[in-house]
Structure formats: structure tokens, C-alpha cells
Image 1: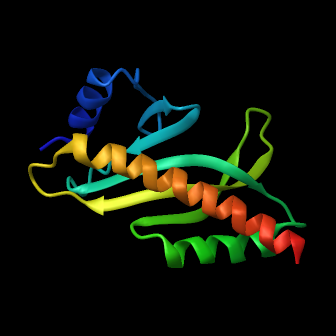
Image 2: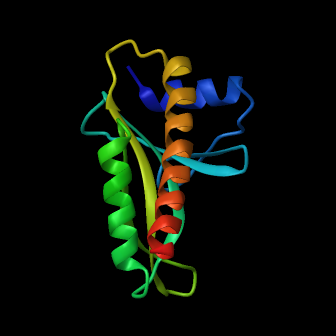
Image 3: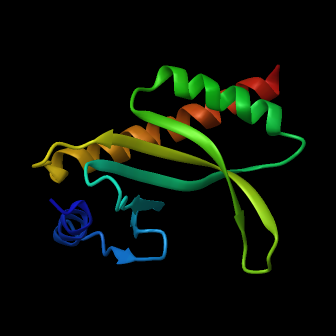
Length: 138
């Protein structure tokens, strides 16, 4: 089983125009960026991500952690976490990422997994932003 090839083939067939990057397979859906990460050490590990949905700063870090914890405890299979990255100018940025992670069987139906994964991640993003707004209002 080659999940990377299955993903490329599925995304191309569905018209997503995927392209390979140093991180994995990138594509867009409804204006959102997604990345599929291949794990060469575990062929069954399926990890689809929605990168950099919100920037973390010193001022908002506590609220972000509370909002992430709320979403992580309420939405199954999806988790939010922060990731440090450098931009083109070498500046360090910390952002919230949304991940959908499962262990796929040896004959995964990618056409069943990917749409549900994207829907769950979009829902997690909405829930995260709503919780942030709620926390900011209190």
C-alpha cells in the first residue's frame, strides 16, 4: 500500500490539483490549504493537516491553549496544536495547525476518508475560532 500515491491519484481525480512539497502533498479546498504528510516509517499512518489557521502571540497564547484544549476534547479524531516555523525572512512564527490522524487499514478507501477528514478539520477550525471569541468576550 502506498498512501502517498493513493492520495495523489484521488486528489487529481477529484480535481484538487495536488502538488508535492518538501512537507508532503499540498492542495486547496474551498479556499483552505491542506497538507498530507507521508510517514515512511509507518505505511498505515494517515495524517492530513490544515496549516497555520491562527497566529500565536504572547498576548493570545493562554486563550489559544484553552480554545485548543476545548476543541481537542470535544471533536473526535481531530487535534489542534501549535507549530513553530520560519518565514522566508528567517522570522520565527508560531501558528495553530489542525490535524486529522488515523491508522488506515491495508486497503483504505481514500474517497471515504478525505472528505470526512476535511469536514472535521473545517469544523474544528470553526469551533476553535468560536471558542477564542467566547474567551475574548469574558
